[in-house]
Image 1 (tube, helix red, strand yellow):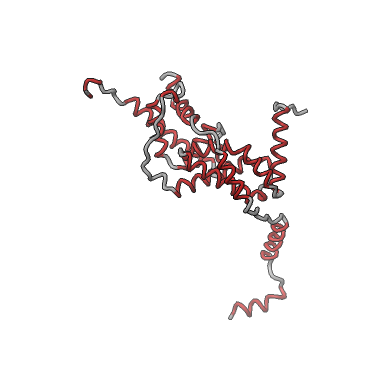
Image 2 (spheres, one colour):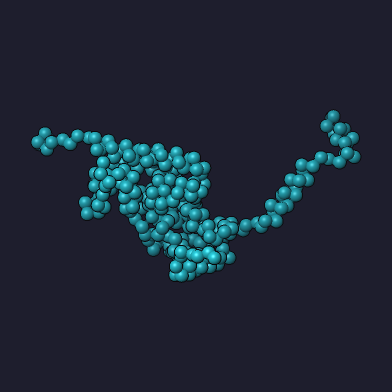
Amino acid sequence: MSVSRDPDRLISAYLEDGIDELPDRAYDAVRSEIDHTRQRVVLGPWREEQMRRYAIFGSRRPPSCWSPWLEYAFAR
Amino acid sequence: VIVSNRSDPEKMEDRVHRALIDRAKGGDREAFDALARTVGDRCMAIAYRILRDADLAEDAVQAALITAWRQLRSLRDPDAFEPWLHRILTHECYAEARRRRMLTEIRVLPFHDEAESTDILTVNDRDQLDRAFRRLTVEQRAVLVFHHYLGLPLSEVAERLGIPVGTAKSRLFHATAALRASLEADARTPSVPQERLA
């Protein structure tokens, strides 16, 4: 097989051809849309920190003074 | 001492690009408009190659840019803007393909002029590849375009598309095999003498 018939080269050449330009009307459409669109507010890293704290709190064993109450609650 | 291979104009361009991203993140619409104009053509090139339809590609790029504007504040690293945008764009291409039921639609193949062909690609090759390409899933096409057209290594393709490397490898393998098979089948087809057709 000659170099020019290498399938990978043919595939690359096939993908090379095509449209490479976004028409101006598309930029104008995007511009007019974002003029009426607000950016999403991103909550800061404090949120992750707070969630982690809750996770730690939730994973801890309950204090021993709670055990009579817990036994009573789950026995019902 | 780290010696950079990049030229000063390139560095300057990067700085301008980064400044635009920072301003756009702060809600500056003019900056985002300017930013969109620096990345729009490349996005169109990618979307067109995945969808093989100019109208669908244009819609996908528009949707991707609008989504990028809405979610820009969630982008932590401004240097990762382009890969981040490409991931959004790919998902918009998937959505566009599904929305228009492109994968099941029977389309008339575009006519290619002989003069349009590159040196190594004949009109027949192009038609064979066109048919085979349209039979691929849109996910396989995306991997092919990012790997062959953008020249990205598979690990980066996987990162940009948000898929495991193994999945990217498998999609590339099956897509390439299908395209190769179409070319080989065409090469094996015996040519019919003209007299018989007459």
